[in-house]
Image 1: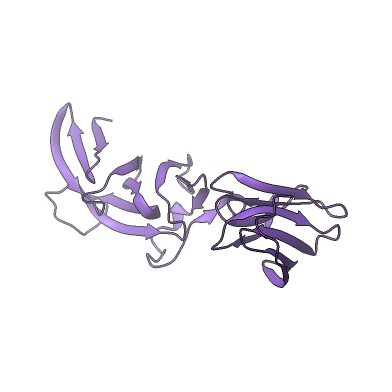
Image 2 (image 1 turned 60 degrees about the vertical axis):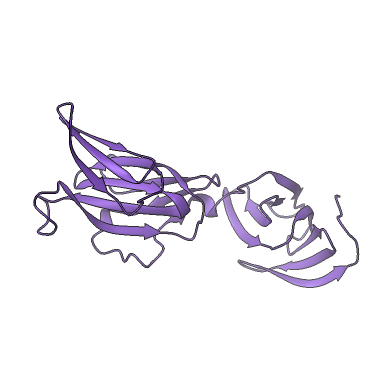
Length: 220
């Protein structure tokens, strides 16, 4: 309509009406850049550093806030993903919101349930259980099962089901990973670390170390 919202690099939102600056909303991102802002029926949503997302609502839709201010802070959410949110988009019916992270992850957020969602909980659901945020350093295909095992420079291991197009297992480590091999049965993997070669059993949703070999920085 006649109102334009402009996000700034110091955490403010400028409210412009008919070409004139009418108000400045100081958000919870004060002093840090707002990377993305979207408008929705009840107000607007901003997102930025450390996976944070804040919802602001029009003061004429709820009996709270100062009537002189066009918007008030409603809720702020933060998921387990620590990287910055760099983009937001919302479905036509405003049921679901998609957040895009600087780590190449995409998450869905149930915006239609925002009234009952608790700020302290993680409501971001990663698409496909998440992806590698950096380059893949090793990959292997299972012979007897439709599985592909990958490891990356983000120090994570992921086991994918290429028929279901899902990620079945995700495991993050503290050390760099240089290579990976998966057993033909799909029940074991060997990972190459900078100090050792480690053997893991593949569980339903985890990897458990079973043995290790004194081989450093194995590439293949």
